[in-house]
Amino acid sequence: MRSLYSIPIEALQRIYGEDPQMLEQQSLRYRRGLEAFMARYGPGEVRIYRAPGRVNLIGEHTDYNHGYVLPMALDKDVLLFARARADQVVNLANIEAGFGERHFLIGRDIPPQPLGDWANYVQGPAQLLEREQGPGLRGFDALVDGAPPHGVPRGAGLSSSSALTVVSAVALVRLNGIALEGPALAESCGRAEWYVGTRGGIMDQFISILAQRGHALFLDCRPAADGSYRLKQVPIPAGYAIIVVDSGVRHRNTGPLYNRRVAEGRIGVRLLQRRFPGITHLRDVNHLPWEELEPLLPEVIHTDELLQMGIDPEKILDGGVSPGTDTFFVRKRCRHVISENNRVLQSVAALERGDMATFGQLMGEAHASARDDYEISTPEIEALVRLANAVPGTVGARLTGAGWGGCIVAAVREEAADAFREAVVCGYRRETGLEAHVFICRSASGAGEVLGITWGEPT
Image 1 (cartoon, rainbow, N blue to C red):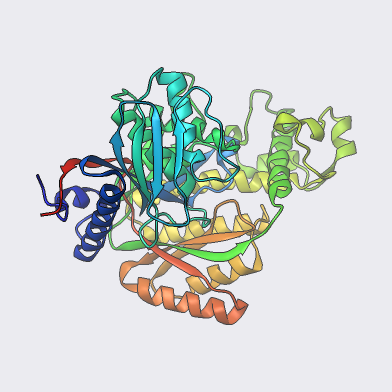
Image 2: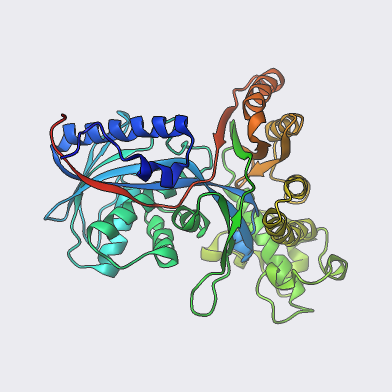
């Protein structure tokens, strides 16, 4: 038997690269998890799975318009140490004491834990896979490690919850010998997360599973007729760090603002259909000059005018959700989505030719569009973007995520990363009195099994 204190370095190199300091830190992390697992469940076989978080480099509020996104998996991940059971019981423990133990039985209808409970992100894939790949899936004993500094930061918009869903699904699939992988597994994970009460898109799960180290993933969010998706691995030029900065600002009650943006885009489609009857989403007019589209989209339009045109804003959203307003800023919202789709395509081309200067410029244009046309920025986010761009070595910065607070993402030369952290944290504190949290990240490979090994007592 191997020593409990020996981690095969080649297994970590495949995921985290060659940096000796990073490998040593990850080795300590994995050993800590293995020791905690054995202390909880006893010696025997242990299989280790991981799923990374992500940041969207460019392509904001395009996914629900059937547009394009360019996410990158981060070297911040969620680990799951697991041992298969002969029955359908799942026992969950967590390396962090604040997350209590959970236990459930795999079945077609697993009673959810209270809203927001961490176990729901494990129960969701267990229920979906039992329904679609069962019956009779085997359970497992598990220990989860998403703790800082190497876990996916929670509440920072880096998709920690999706990473937990994905790593749980990967473990269930591998432990049960289910032939499900790649895009099909990612699509299943997207649906599995509906269990927690959200109807999100596909980006988070696709990048977590399909990521390649050193690359971002171009994803066309419109499925083909056969249900497949257009994907492309896009190289990230060497010598750059992707840095995420959390503003610490979370604006409440942003749901109505989000729904209003969705409604304004759909109203734009309905208005454009008067000239282009075959379109269904804004991406269908991406090839047309904006000068041809602009006159067809009013800057402002009200409910009474729309009703006269046969468009009822109260019925434009799914599930009877109201947009919560009688005034719609259609032109600028559509301009953002259409121009953002084009920026994603231009970013792919720039990165493929190693042109970080152009990519940085496109990040700046994307931020200005999100701020001015989609109106999802805040004073705190503006301060962070301004501070980031002022640091020598920064090639571009923009808000990332849904907006109204949250995070920015910046592309920075690796040698400038530490100076970036100091300048942005100090400047943000001075300007706002708030603490910014900086995550210096590099691209990582997608989810999967790291290693499986039988552990005895330490030697």
